[in-house]
Length: 219
Image 1: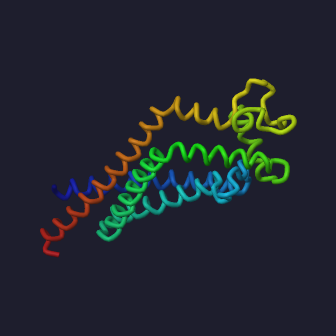
Image 2: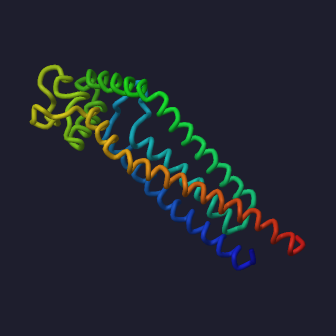
Image 3: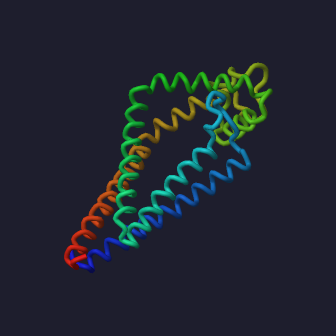
């Protein structure tokens, strides 16, 4: 691999990470917006920090940090930053694989815990404003009512529920959406993993080429 190939690889890795850095900025911005406006409130009171805003802020921050290391490591030809980029991508990839395995193994237990958590939050609808905001937003956006249906609500359902008495519950509707879009979710997940592996490969190749170039120049 000559100097021209090294430059090409360097700039490909740089622009690849620059694009992801901007994506991370956008995700972080949406997270801050949701955190400030609190449009989706809190659904799981045993996990009060598990809100859409917090999740987006964490994901956006991680993407920005990793992409920044990739950008600076490639454009500066810095081996330390490149290896940090490689190691972080490897850790994220392993964490994703581990999470996927755990979700598959404990699917039934997680389904039960989620349903119980949502049922518990319904009982707090009238006493907790964050819970009220969360349920109203979800029922309006998904056109659903309660966890399993209108029968989950004691008395009359809230105004955010659709008027149709046969309307599905939000948990059931979310599960149906997930199962009907499982193929697309799988394809997106595989694409993300492939992009991560490509990023790791580019970083490792560039790191090795920097060594060879330094040796050739007698540095």
